[in-house]
Structures are given as structure tokens and as C-alpha cells.
Length: 339
Image 1: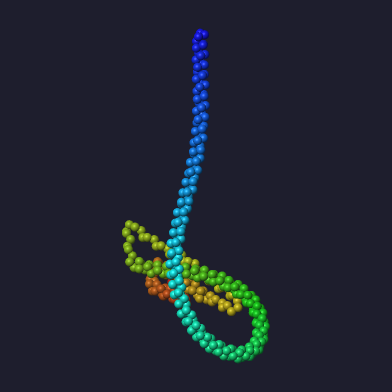
Image 2 (image 1 turned 60 degrees about the vertical axis):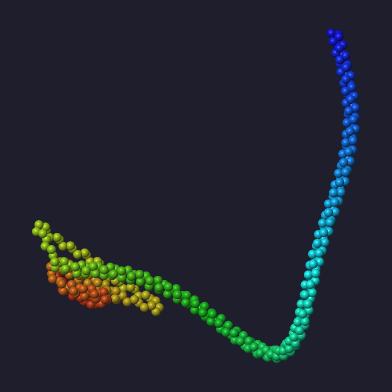
């Protein structure tokens, strides 16, 4: 055990000696590397200086080349400018010749214009003298115009006063006209109301006339059917005769009240009354004729008389219609009494 320890101790010492030797070698190697590193740094610094010197030389070469190119471009530009200047000088020489020619023509024109101006100045002087004379005449005319204007102004002032008086009179007339207009409007409204009443009465008369025409047409058809009666069958009883429709009542037209207005003509109600009376008579005559016909009486001639009365009524011959209707009523007096 002790031998082993001794052996290990000796071994450890050998290893320590080896390590020390190795450390010394490393230190020597480190010193050598440090010296080599310093040499390399010096070489790198020297190379960097040389590189910078080369870059400077290269920049100088580039600058020299650029300067040479610039000089060449300048030479070319100078040559082009020289050509342009030469052509411009040639153009300037041509322009100078043209200007000299234009100046000679301008001198000739100036001389001609001088002559014309002298002539115009003489004409203007003559016109100025004429204007001076005309101005004297205008002064005289202006004086006359002022006198006439003052006279006219006095007349206008008088006319204005007259117009003011007439305006006052027209205002008064306008007031009276407004009053008359209100009166006329009231009268017009009353006449319109009366016209509406007359229109209503006219409508009733037209309805009565339509009824009368219907009755007369029925009267025309009745005799024709009576002339060709169809015999009823033996087994069936005879059909009862239809009773005629009751006559339409005709309202007697009233005479409208007279309109009390200035210069307004009163309506004449007499034709309306005569027409209503004629229609009433004719309606009663037709009713009596129908009853007589239904009772079996021969009334063919009276039908023609009724037609004539109807035509007279439509033509406005009311007196003729009344006379014929009265004649028929007198002939058919029993039928009228039976009614």
C-alpha cells in the first residue's frame, strides 16, 4: 500500500514536472505567437498603407481621365459653338442687310408721311376754323333753345296743375263708379237667381213637352193597331185595355218680379205663360182623344188636328195650338166630362 502510494506520488511528481515543462513550452509558444502577431499587425498596417496609396493613385488616375474627358468635351463644345457663332454671324450679316433695306424704305415712308401730315394739318386747321364758326352758331342756337325750354317748362307746369285737378276728379269718379259697381253686382245676382228660376220652369215645360210627344206617338200607334186587331181565341177572355198614364201636372208659370235697376229691361213672361197654357190644353185634348178612341168613337180626323196642334206648338205658334186644342176639346166634350 505504501509502495503504491509512493508510486502514485512519484507518478504525480513526474506528471507535475511534465506539466511544468509543458507550461514553459506554452509560455514560450505564447511569447512566440505574440511576437508573430505583432509582426502580422505591422505587415497589415503596412499593407493597409500601401492599399490606401494604391487607392489614392487610382483616384488620381480617374480624376486625370475625367479631366481629359472633360477637356475633350469642352473642345467639342467649343468647336460646335464656333460653328454656331459662325452661322449666327452669317445670319446677323443677312439681317443687317435686310434692316438696312428696311431703314431705307422706312425713310421713304417717313418722308411720304410727313407730306401727308402737312396736308392733314392744313385740312385740320381749316376744319378748326369751321368748327369755331359752327360753335358760334351753336351758342346762338343754345340761347334760343334755353328760351324755348323755359317756355315749355312753364307750359308743362301749367299742364301738371291741370292733370292734378283731373286726377282729383277721376278719384271722385272712381269712388262713384265703385258704388255703382256694387249696385250693379247686386242687381246681377238677383237677375241670375231669376234666370235660374226661369231655367227650372223651362225644364218642367220641356218634360211636359216630352210627355206630350210620347202621348202623341202612342196615339199614332194606337189607331194602326186598332185597324188590324187579332181575334182572341174563343176559350180566352178578351184582354183588358190598359188605362192611359195620368197626365203630368204642369205647373203654371209665375210671372217674375220686375227688377228695379237702372237701364235694365224687364223680362217678358208672356211667351212662357202662353206656351204652358198651350201645352196644358194640348195635353187635355190628347187625353180626351185617347178616351174617345178607347170607347170606340171614330176620332181619326181629330188625330190629324192634334198633330197640327203639336207642330204649331213646336214652331212657337202657341195661339194656333191653343185654338186647335180647344176645338178638339169642344168636339170631345162628353169624354172630357166623363173624365
